[in-house]
Image (cartoon, rainbow, N blue to C red; front, side):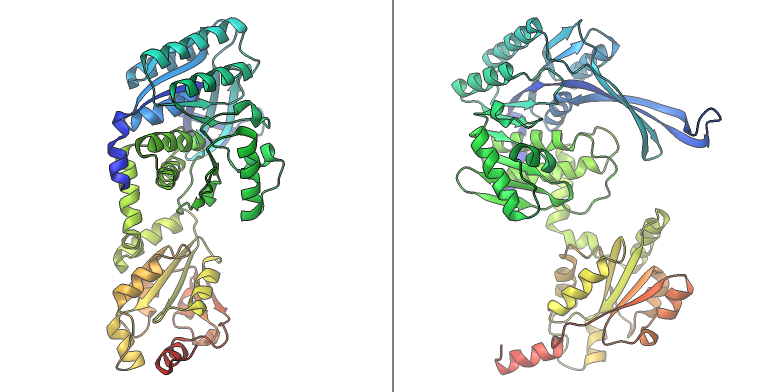
Amino acid sequence: MRITEIMKRFGRQRILVVGDVMLDRYVRGTVERISPEAPVPVLRVTEEAFAPGGAGNVAVNLRTLGAGVELVGSLGKDREGDDIVRFLKESGIGSGGIVRDSGKPTTSKTRLIAGNQQIARMDMEVDTLTHENVEKALLKSIERAVKEFKPKGIIISDYSKGVVTDNLVSRVIKLAKGSGIFVTVDPKGENYGRYRGASAITPNLREAELASGLKITDDKTLKNAADIIMRQTETDFVLITRGSGGISYFSKHGDAGTVPSHPVEVFDVTGAGDTAASVFTLSFLASYLLEESVKIANAAAGVVVSRIGTASVTQADLRTYFAREEEGEKGKIQARGALAKTLAGLRAKGRKVVFTNGCFDLFHTGHLKLLREARKLGDALVVAINSDKSVRKLKGPGRPYITETDRAVLIAALDCVDYLCVFEEDTPLELIKELKPDVLVKGGDYRREEVVGGGFVEGLGGRVVIIPLVKGMSTSSLAEKIKNGKK
């Protein structure tokens, strides 16, 4: 089933969200001076905004993607609670399961943001366990929702703010099992035994280490940690979110894998775990396909971390993401004029641009090493390849072995390559002058003074780096071995 077909089924799903609901408030402005009262920046406020956080963010993510959603949680009898209830109603999220608790304030997190930088956060919370009477009211709301709303899935969003008690978790999972409802838990704490019987559990890397008691350093320890969590919870699936490392998934049936994250500019990780748990659950209920559901969840998390604040993702966002992934090389391959503008924008943000060039005909491990090492020297790697016409002029008739289109697609598919450009000239000098890289890289068969464009880059304050070659590895030697049938 294609991912687009899965997303078309989102609107048919009904999901009940249970957990700690909070208010995420954002106070944005500019900082132009330091306070005379203390060595702290003075934020000149230009904008204030808020959104539901925690379980509320899970609900908003689901609703934005088209699912029917009801939310069960507790809020204080205060203005913050009123704001959240109003937001939920305006968003089309069922809020009949919200219990107002006069004994505790609404958990709120206020972030002070200057430009794109968070400079402080203020939390208002009382994380004691929910009062017995409030817990009874919550359980009654859950039972009503299961009977009347008839959800296909339940997500328990645990932020350790007092709502998700041991008793509540146990009762919800038991009720769900008896009704054939899929349950995902976004966990907290070290005792995962309390989530026993859930269908899926979605810790992040640090949470998985705490729950398993293992330091996760490689694929082996990652799998061992997942196995421990699976035994603790008797769950069907364990998804471990790993930030820039993507999402690793494990099934009680033995299925396992990792969906890598694509490089994005991270502005704010707020709510990324909420998004992963909600979108995985929604996708799985729409398809019952594990890997595809993890892919969609990973894509959604990648979208929200590229935005400031508690953000939700739309189907349009996901369609754009996967369209770019399917034709990812087109996003990386740019005409020189467009690429010059792209790189100027990166440099304006303080990013260091690395440039290297070559024919890259019959791509081999020597090329791969060069590109990987080059990428470590900055924030974005640009690869310029000679056009077919240019290669023929340099290498003679019969070359290139691989067309410029195929070479470009192959190289652009590498994670270490950020941008690619094809040039027609014999040398890349004019292209280098146009792109103005900070670092110019060539392979070890060149001396520094021989590197085309080296003087220009150094004149701009940049540098030239020579990376040693892989011994015995070259396109010509590889071609000769192929012709002679040698290994």
